Amino acid sequence: MKNTITDLLKHLTEAREVVIFSGAGLSADSGIPTFRDGATGLWANIDPEEVASIEGFENNPDKVWAWHEAMRALFAEVQPNAGHEGIASLESLLPNARVTIITQNIDGLHQASGSTRVFEIHGSALRVRCHHHCGFIELWQAGQLAPRQCPSCGARARPDVVWFGEALDEEVFAHAAEAAIDADIFITVGTSAIIQPAASLPMAAKEYGAMIVEVNPHATPFSEHADYSIRSGASEFFPALCAVLLNGIGKLDR
Ligand code: NAD
Image 1 (cartoon, rainbow, N blue to C red):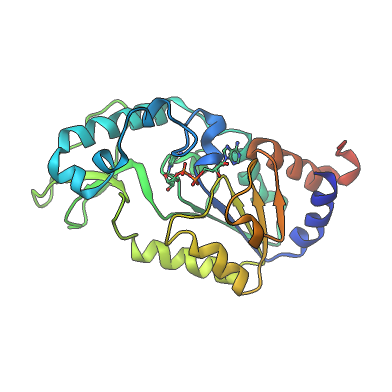
Image 2 (cartoon, rainbow, N blue to C red; image 1 turned 45 degrees about the vertical axis):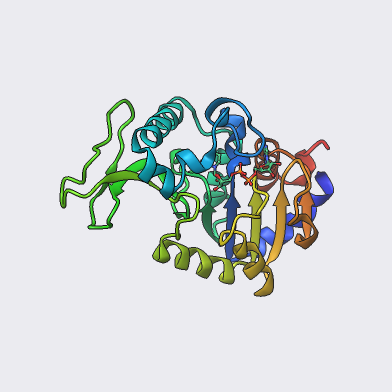
């Protein structure tokens, strides 16, 4: 990893726009199972179409709410890991750059670790909103029952997450796309980058000239498009990168 970080160092310190594109693998070390890796916990014996799709919500809203309540409870128990913390530290370690996080995660851990510019393109399980988009949206406090009805218009309320088959929030996605296009360095972490339209963002960044770095312990279909494909867990890689930015490459022992 030392050689790769040495190479990255020069590019990072010269970059003006740095984008981190995160997926479920980033939160794995916090104890949140990823969709694909985890036949345990939240995803055990679960058909995602039943608990995380609009059809599932129409057919059995109680089941959808129960599953999201379990997820909300899990998210209340976990903490950001060293990967999230390292990413948050980049804001101060790269004073000449703007650091933008584009996340597919819905767990709020980027903000909990201190990152300030975060676009949650798949929404957040820490919020509820009006199903009919009347404008009602509020934080879903841990331990509290979320409203089943929108207090503003009486339509159904729902978790503020993007379910399978739903469109992404246009404004949030437009900001994310703009950041991808402007990126000098675009780092994907903990994602197989196959879920569309999210997966179009690293490709757009590449097309517009960004250097692309992938951080993932396993190869993905996206690996061949990356300039650097780093086979490492996020909670090892980002602290190592931050240590080098802080202390210089000589302090990195491998
Ligand atoms: P994914 O397709 O992004 O796959 C997870 C990836 O993370 C895999 O490529 C895996 O090799 C990699 N990975 C595993 N451990 C890692 C680590 N320690 N460091 C770096 N990478 C690691 O994600 P998915 O699980 O298939 O999820 C699909 C959708 O569901 C996405 O929208 C995702 O964000 C969402 N989801 C979110 C959460 C969350 O908010 N924490 C959890 C599960 C799923």
